[in-house]
Image (cartoon, rainbow, N blue to C red):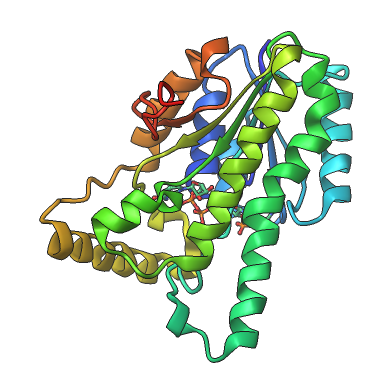
Length: 273
Ligand SMILES: NC(=O)c1ccc[n+]([C@@H]2O[C@H](COP(=O)([O-])OP(=O)(O)OC[C@H]3O[C@@H](n4cnc5c(N)ncnc54)[C@H](OP(=O)(O)O)[C@@H]3O)[C@@H](O)[C@H]2O)c1
């Protein structure tokens, strides 16, 4: 029975991963969330499902992830096949800020350090905490959900000066994931970063739903104005269906790559030395 841990599964893309993986009758899914009682969408989706386990874990608190790994281990007998690290700070009130949107440099520093802890150190904490379980499986797949926002060529093409802390800290996560890929390659691991594309998660954003929908409209309008391009916004269901096709098809040759939800490489530079 394949086992999956989804880190940051309360809402949005992580929640949809839990939904789709749980619908596969032969899987067991571990939803790791920082506030199980407050994860209303997840609790509703998991009601009556025997193959979904919800465990507490905050990616900035390494000990909490070690405790979550221990709880997973007790269910699986010490193994985990797939780690899907989804958690990130995509808060509509902070993630879209530009350098001038902070009151002063102290506020900027605080916001960047907070984003770094969640978005950059979070995947390192999760991979490290679950590594003993992943090593005990023959599958050995680690997927960190990345973002095109970390790609300088996207910023250039879209002429986007904002989304600074989020983009910079997701760039650090991409490098961390790449380093893990080569640290673990000789053990048979496949470690990738996977970009979900543009996904409208406003339906599960609670009190931020309307603000997030407005922000996505504003972002699409900016892209259209700067480039003439229409932004294709997917539902979480569409994106995760595509992402799972990529994950289901992972091969050793994918180790270390940054892939798109459509399956191709985000940076088509593998052949450049
Ligand atoms: N949506 C897009 O268009 C898009 C595009 C590119 C990449 N991505 C990436 O896709 C992933 C999911 O994004 P999303 O749009 O689904 O965001 P979202 O709806 O805001 O969900 C973020 C998830 O991360 C969790 N999280 C935040 N901080 C955490 C922490 N310290 N510990 C544990 N969990 C934490 C949240 O839990 P709480 O409920 O506790 O806050 C929530 O479950 C992120 O990695 C993001 O960078 C999204």
